[in-house]
Length: 220
Image (tube, rainbow, N blue to C red; front, side, top):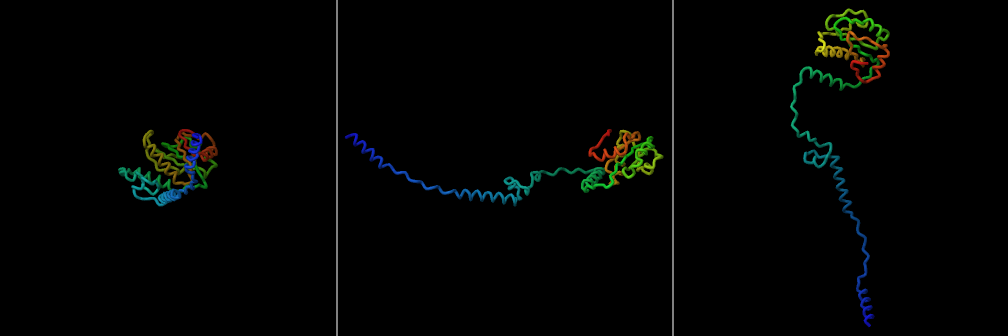
């Protein structure tokens, strides 16, 4: 009897247990998608139409905001010398000028000499037959030289006294270069002294310099 009663009680308890219900499917979080879309739209608008006040620049980084250097104090201006002003003007004009391709490129040979050129006849043979492919400029610091070659006649520029190792040498080189720059066909510039001589033929030197874009100091 006790076993039967226990079995009935257990059956009764089982009937009392609640029946599991089927949960309905959760609704899709549409509000999250709407919120993300609004935030994305706001960021895109802020990038396309950037704010121009300084406070917003810390939040949004865009090209419309002023840089941090805008709030820095201006650097004190220094008064330039006459040579610095002239140099800045020349450099600005050269850099702003559009590149031009010369139809007749030439090499400018700049001779820095105290007087006559002892190897002028050798240079005459070097230049012979290559007219129109070179220019000659002579800076004679002491005596006006007497030329034997037609390539050197009337090629002297305004000269001044030059002392070796002093700033006057730089001034003389600047005069030579300034006169050579007047001819836009001069593409390369060779600075020479009275003791320099050519070791190669003109065609070799011309092609070698025209095909390079580097400078040579005390060597070739």
